[in-house]
Amino acid sequence: MKNALSFILLVFISLNCHAQISFEKGYFIDNANQKIECLIKNIDWKNNPVEFEYKIAEGQSEEIKTIKSAKEFGVYDKSKYVRRLVDIDRSSNSLSQLTKDRNPVFKKEELFLEVLIDGKASLFLYEDGSLRRFFYTVDDSDTVQLVYKSYKASDNKVGENNRFKQQLWDDLKCQNILMPDIQMLNYSKRELIKLFEKFNKCTSSDYISYGNKKTKKLFNLSVRPGIRASALTVDSSTLDRRDAQFDTKVGFRLGLEAEFVMAFNRNKWAIIIEPTYQYYKAEAQLERYFVQTDYKSIELPIGIRHYMFLNNQSKVFLNGSFVLDFPMNSVVDYDTVTDLDIDSKPNLAFGIGYNFNDKISLEARLQTGRDVLRGWQSSSSTYKSFSLIVGYTIL
Image 1 (cartoon, rainbow, N blue to C red):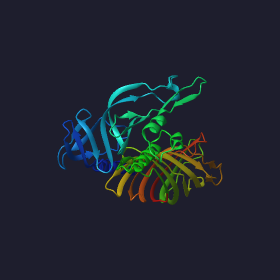
Image 2: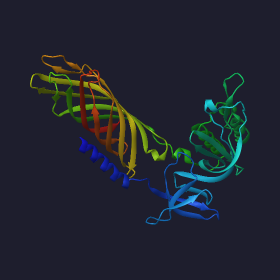
Image 3: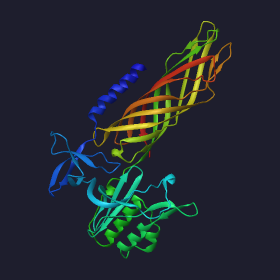
Image 4: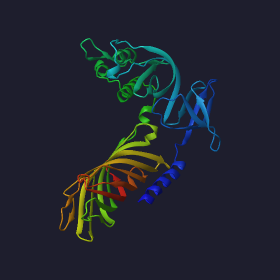
């Protein structure tokens, strides 16, 4: 199994070298207002960038453009960023950092703003860690922040400055936008995009919605049956020679995996939780005793998955998980001496796999040694397993 782990790591390193984020067709506009067609390294920025990598053509060297040398850049049909000099309020929404001042504290900064809606009324987003601010323009007006701020109210409660609602009511005048539409509005990407789309449609204006183009499925539920090769070793510190080495057995495992995809970096990262039923049954003839084990449990791997894209339909992935284990009426059963009830410690699992069309997957997974006799001071054990898992996404 040690060789299997080395093989997994070797394959991962090899694949990682060939499955990096790709350069895609795009453009940038320089300070002389020249539009340069190029290939942009699309990393699906979680935080708004201050620079980007590009190549003029395939086979040419990579270059970097910074916010000082590019007024705009974009990946066709996916994303667009524009440079703006704006007043931005960076007040924290963290409860421990709230102040009693309900007014925004503006600072002038030059930023690349992500374009969510490009039209008569345009909507922009700036994101930096937990900070999220929306900006807008109407009919090519100055780019202004939509104001929302949390603060400490006088009664020690959290107050909200929702000035963005008044801004939108004043500037997005349209017969189809009513006061209740504004009053019920939250300071959220989804709701603001819907409002700006509604305004542009109401005024019969052409617009492009980049925000909707970037919407991707962020939750997957998969059934994951498979086979598992497992082995158990028992070491006893007492004198009755109860050490046992059980043979490797092949058994069935069945898991149900919930995958929560992170909405950044082109959905290359995910959190995975996979409740799994597994069992192991074996026997051994010792010098003094006959012993058998019947080990059934529900495992709960909780971990991180990293995807590496090969093309639009295929991708490989690497898992790392912390595995909790919950045995069910499991025991190491000696014929004439005290049996050892199984009580497991957590362990680690590492896997590498292939996913086709976000529907079918195949994974090889190795688990590190797990002590299943933690309740016995005089005995220890090592339970190891290697699994081949087939996944089918049902949701």
